[in-house]
Length: 202
Picture 1 (tube, rainbow, N blue to C red):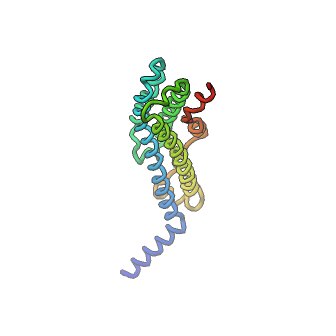
Picture 2: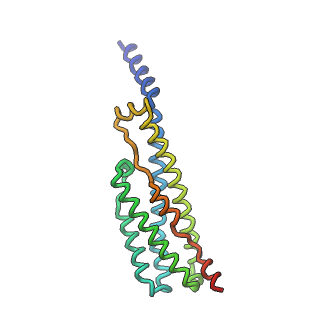
Picture 3: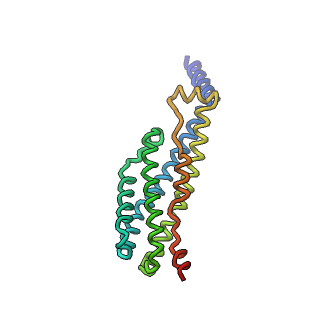
């Protein structure tokens, strides 16, 4: 009886493996890890925003509406609770992405305004903050690309036969991914180059 039980377990494991169960587990975990990195980079950017606003607001008082829009966009972006379940909920994912895109847009407008004020470059710590923000935008782009690829791999396993049967059996479904609009927003994300405008004005 015990031998039969073990044979049944081994057979079941073999069937599950052949039907893509292990691949589902692997790609699901990879997408979760990639998403965690995306969140880490977005958090890093959100943490830099207050420093950026506080650093430049003294020199750009006339642009208070732009500064306010950045603060408001950051507030909306950080108010969304990015739980692990979010990447399995298309509506929640879209809402999160819309908030992040709004923050990207607000930062882009701020960068354009800041370039009009070359005197900001003399503020202590400004160059370091600029470099951190620039590096963070690059990390966000990289993390998103890794996530896009990992979700693509996972979604293929969920959709392809015969692993799609295993996915349905165990409740795995397609995960939402970044859209073309999201990618356009990120590709236009803050280009933190405060030397361009001042150089051109000389």
